[in-house]
Amino acid sequence: MRIVFMGTPDFAVPTLKKIIADGHRVTGVVTQPDRPKGRGKKILAPPVKMFAQEAGLKVYQPEKIKTLEITDILKELAPQVIVVVAYGQILSPEILSIPPEGCINVHASLLPRYRGAAPIHWAIINGEKETGITTMFMNEGLDTGDMILRRVLPINDKDNVGVIHDRLAVLGAEVLGETLKLVEKGSVPREAQQNSEATYAPILTREHEIITWDKDARAICNLIRGMDPWPGARTYLDGEVIKIWRARPDDTSEKTACRPGQILKATPAEGIVVQTGKGLVCIEELQRQGSRRMQAADFLRGRQLLVEKVFGEQ
Image (cartoon, rainbow, N blue to C red; front, top):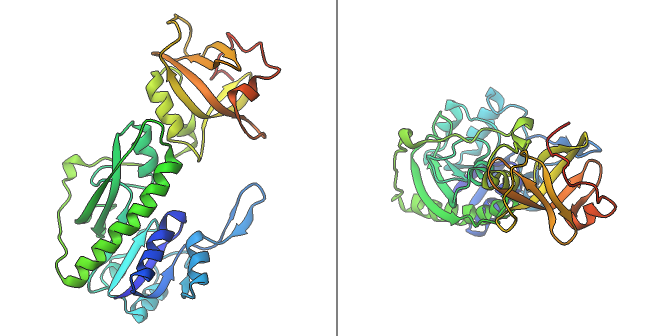
């Protein structure tokens, strides 16, 4: 089939590779403009652009997708299907109506749950035991179109965003491949979403990154997993910003009546054990501002006076 692909980050690249491997003709790739990234604010191309250029595909990078110019370009490309994977802009009704077989989105959740920009992060933050991939026909709403295929992916207690992201990227490519086969056969299923079961996964803000030590130990550990490897869960210690990268509920230490955030133990052998609103958390990996990620044992070298200090107080 003639396909226009729209996508931007690493997550979208396996699906574009799969489309090419399956023998479809990609008539154009639309991705976000090059942006400054990192501490040096170096201008970098999106991963999809880099792969598309290596594959010899024609790339378009409009600042805004809802323009007459890009709509006319898409009409000239004459796609039978537009495939959208984490593109980053909402399509206009005019664009949605261009391909005769529809615009198909690969979404990283089991719709109608976790509609929105950050479904992987919120599934882990909320302690879900499973997530998945849904392919759907796009409409003018936010992830509200009719579903085509859904595939489940389990989330283990130690999985973070990076692990689930990579697994879903591979699964998304597989499910999209199956979906396009059904489209070619003319036997593609459609299932309307139950809006009453929908939940929303909003884009993350700086406030979402902050650890609230009043919460219970499991919720805090889920937040830390849900922020790893980006953007990172933050707290304060002695007025310094500390990112916590890995932690686990501590069911072995004795219960106390200390303040949430208070450090109960801090030794290289035992890690950093912290009181929460309910239960204890053992911090295993963390990072000082301007420093590298490090194991708790490395962080503690030369810091024997941490006990009774309180995380979260500036």
